[in-house]
Image (cartoon, rainbow, N blue to C red):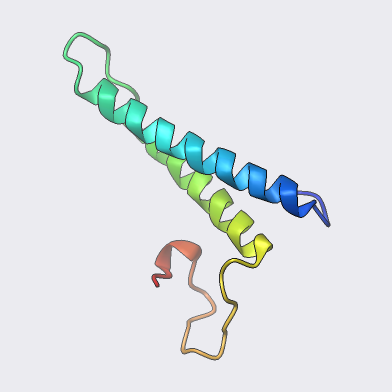
Length: 86
């Protein structure tokens, strides 16, 4: 993502790997929260990591052109990715 012109296959591979890692992180955090014998995970740190990962995932999707860039709709240009819903 940091490269000026990343290879399309590299972006797709990175997108899939990041999506899988985010799903694994959430599943692990949920499983750990339900275990009485295990020390609790730092929930704030998990949430911040998830948010960062989802922002990066959104940037990859935009970079791949998988999200239409229709600015003619009444969208506030100051909105962030998290505010946009299909």
